[in-house]
Length: 208
Image (cartoon, rainbow, N blue to C red; front, side, top):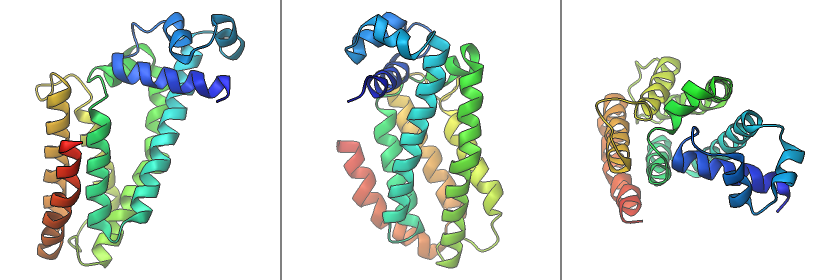
């Protein structure tokens, strides 16, 4: 693995597990298995590491999500597989990480938000339009608005709030919000498929 990839991967792991504020350049070099000299050959300071690792991590996640959506039989299966994927991700995320990025590294946060609008909203909108064509989602939906709404509510659990206090809360609340969203857009036909895929994918995620 190239040193740059080691740095970005190690940084993303540390920031997601422990948040952004307390992680030092020493921590990053140690986790990446490189010297501080090598780290500073690639990045001048922590701000640069945060910016680049956030972009790298978000691209990794978006590419994985795209593959999950493409591989699904229909819109419902795609959405449930996404819920299972993020449930597994949430097991490793510090609930305060997003808040710390927004507060202490706003440039990185703005990059992250921009990528959400550029790629994630588009993927979700396509899923909603696909589900409407398949008769699995209601035909009176505003796909663009609901795609943005879904992303905003998924980010809500990663902010300080009355809903989440630890990783267990994060996982259960994220799933509850995702399920609430789906029941709001599914047709009866979609609901039947949802029960099938929920048993297949979400129970697997819960025991993983």
